[in-house]
Image (cartoon, rainbow, N blue to C red; front, side):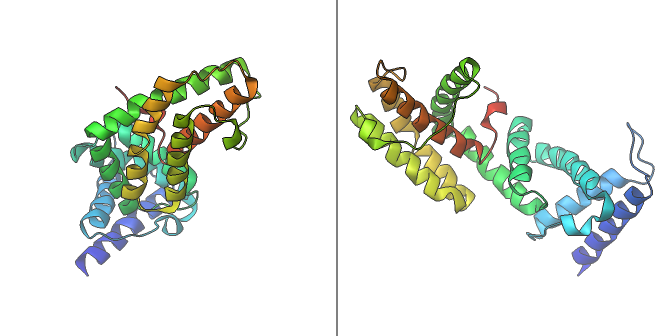
Length: 235
């Protein structure tokens, strides 16, 4: 009951001051709004409450979400989660769930992603994904009209293509699963990605084979970026 009352009080405080334009500026925060925002985040995390804050933030919703995200960066830094991981996950999550802001879901996703990226599996996956993304970015720089069509298994010229395709389908099927399952599906991509690059040349002489391989890589790239913007991950 105490946490519920404290949460309501802090939300009322933030929405009221933002509604009349009394927002923190620079280092100045005479009404303790940053502290109130951190309090909201801490209560939801410690009480393990999933609550969509968006409908509770009033007319200043967009400004308040941005303000709370800034405080979430600070809160997660104190929990030992790297800034680049926070940025990668939060920006993608807000884009995927426009109009929804569940602080606890974000924190749990950040914790899970942080553990994964700090593991050997995570580091190995990032190495393979960076190669995938680099090839695709190079292709897009040459042709701004590059499109991603469906992968056609009839154009596979090497067994590693079929193996990578199956791993990509498993990742796609996990898109609606929980974070741990999705990250596990990404980890399972590591071996197939490295074996694919060892066995084939993406820019095959046959245009159909070449395009099919690019389509395959593009599908993997998009599936990963739908979870988090791994392009901003350092190292």
